[in-house]
Length: 252
Image 1 (cartoon, rainbow, N blue to C red):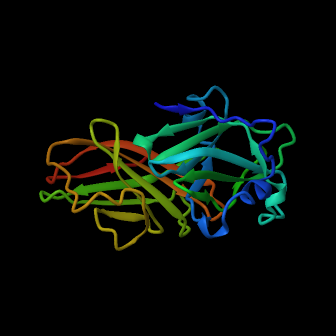
Image 2 (cartoon, rainbow, N blue to C red):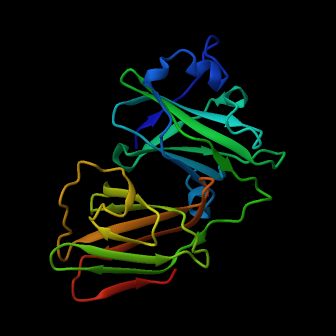
């Protein structure tokens, strides 16, 4: 996977507010998608860096930066967000970038934002909460996942929230045999009809049009359930085959 090393020069602004001040406000947007989590499967990938932060990226994103604030009481105070010298890993065929960081010794929750440049515009995410080690339990596995495919290439996907059925935001990613995602959406529902976009809140793969699964082909599905503070609560990743003769059920 491609990696981009981020760094700060002596003249780089350390405050997010100062950094934003260099750009035209008319070319600044704050609708970037972002979430974080501490699922144990991710810890083994990055050598004890327990918190993983994922951000959606356009293909021309550059200068991708992570900003951390130690005060959860002042989410809109950009002066309190300090630029963090962290490496971002480009994943999912370039759809997302992922930061991996460690818990702090003080065990306080923190806030995070991510910014990047695309063309002549600055993009900034809303703030999300990075839960502390003592406040956070490991992400639970999604249960009662059902996948029913049709001969016409559609897929009905339903799941439960492992005992937490809040109307949170669900990131759904489907990959083919190459391991590259061709469908990525966010939905507030505990279900998704591939590829019906009427009930999704965000489509990360807008070039996908009238998509169909191929009967007999193998695919993988990942679902990340995120609470309203942007923290991942439930997760599952499974492999399945487009087989219109049966319903495939995954309990954990």
